[in-house]
Picture 1 (cartoon, each protein chain N blue to C red):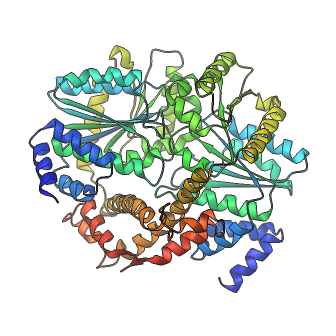
Picture 2 (cartoon, rainbow over the protein chains, first blue to last red; picture 1 turned 180 degrees about the vertical axis):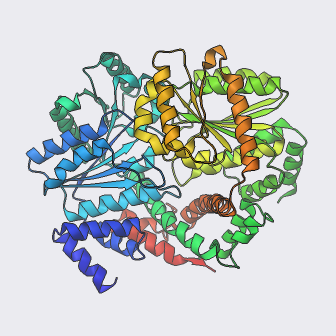
Picture 3 (cartoon, one colour; picture 1 turned 90 degrees about the vertical axis):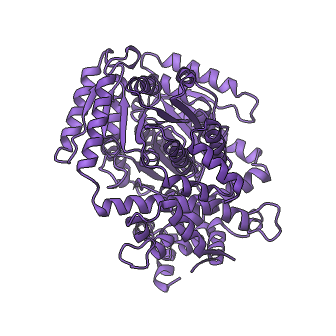
Length: 317
Length: 317
């Protein structure tokens, strides 16, 4: 590591927020020393409690996160937030109204909020999320919240970074529950029915209850909570339940097999996110006459053929 | 390629559906000859028109696909379908009611429907989708439809396989439109407001219209269509619009830069989906005492460190 980077890391560890922000741009730009940086950071991380918050658009996740931050702050805990902003998959996204609201906390020294525009390909988003969370953790935040939109297959990767994941639904989410069933159960440690003062809240609540009962017998029975985030209703209950899940995880640690699978998955995600850009730079550079690109462009060869040729150049020793 | 596999490919090309189904299980099991198979298949593909259908849970996508199939069949065209079933991210998912309905077409020789359970990591799903679509294309289907649930960042990867993508919304999708704006525009070639006989349909219709106007000036102005799929209303219009987009693509082909980016992305996706399992087998095998796994498990090293060590073993010649 260059002395400059090493110095930056030291500053960050000493609580310099500007150094933290600077390191975050290293993540954005895939700084060449990023792997080394994150490896160093990773060794001083692991103290923050990591909470995931996900759910469909319009579920009121940002407001909920806002109130959860306030609750932790009242307890004297510091909070880092990674908000994955889907408003544009390419440009990195405009600032949403909800996000602006959260920025109120930015006047608060004990809160740091970072938006992450979504990147297209090759696990870029899960890697970037993991890195940002690692930095917030190493900086010393007590709690790190990862907020993302969507209820899908792919949220899994991102949510794997969190220890406790809240799936936030609203009275209008009936179709989501019917369609996603097992998919939801795979992600959720806690269900929150937000906007619970609206018509249909009880119906959704009971649908989620039946869903969780279908999966009864697991060590942790997924609780279903009601909230009206805009009125701060149900927030204390949510935070208490997160702590209960935290305690549960401590008492019922993952089996060594689960742990191994988890770590391997993490490791492979990092390896592939590093390899993607390297492979591209070496074999698929536009400007290079030797690039395998020309096989693609001249339509002499299909992508599978070109992939096979590139793979032939990769040696695993 | 082994003679057996080569024979299977020949049979498939001659219209043997059992051979087609067998090759699809090769995709599921990541058959060791898969890259070779897909490369061969890819050369006889490219004739099918590829249509993506995506949208939030409960938007009625399967019913819509069902009616679109019927429309193409009435025109004498054959149709292959890949339905990405999110009901479970791990088990591959139960059969949904909607899916059963679609299975009616299975009595029809001109239709082939394949469900694809979602896989966790490392672009597995986009690779598998691409492979299955390639097989259906090579078999000779005139139209291939890719149906997936979700409106998110990650649908992008899957939808990149399609030439024309319909984003299906319903009167209840107001929040989705507000939250996802540019994200939706990045995916959609055509918007369909389904269940348009419900209250609020006009509101959504006009919101989508304003959204598409915000992006006016693009070569293709994204049309907004109304449909009531269960009543077969609006289907002919949708199919006509798909054909119009098809014609547009022919007249305004991608720039060579766009084409290059697209092919490179495809190629890299294939390379990484091959490398993931190979890296795992070589460096992260549980049972192997030499595996880098033990560094992870014994907690001597963090995943970034282990990733760096594995990367040190990978040579790009």
